[in-house]
Image 1 (cartoon, rainbow, N blue to C red):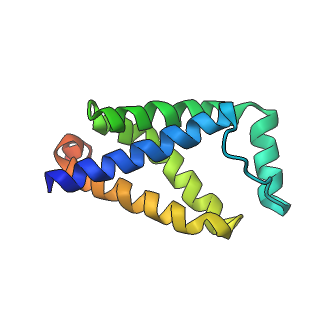
Image 2: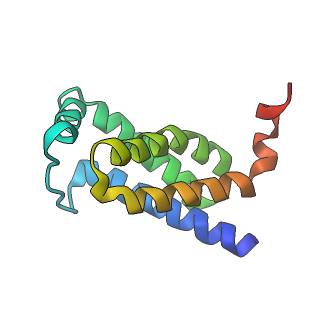
Image 3: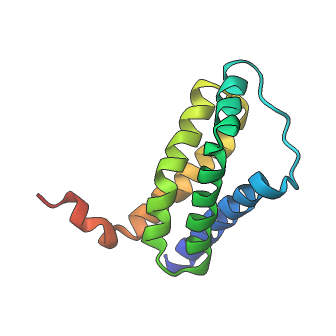
Length: 123
């Protein structure tokens, strides 16, 4: 179980660090989406909100990669993962498989670190 959680947090952390850094360095060329997805992305870029999300991705991914404060990293990445999943469900279905894989990794890690989140479910 410990090996699986190390693999999951490494994959999740690496994914978010790479794609977070790509927002600044643009080493992975991504074609701009069309239609409503393109309008949504344009609003994120023009408002510079996209860079805030990228910083959260880098910070949360780095915490997962390092293995220190993994629950904090998952807390930072949680809203980002939900938005990525909803974006691909409703606006751009081509990226849905990667979004589902990332969601499954995050849910597995939430379960693996459930003792850290126990206080959220106590009345």
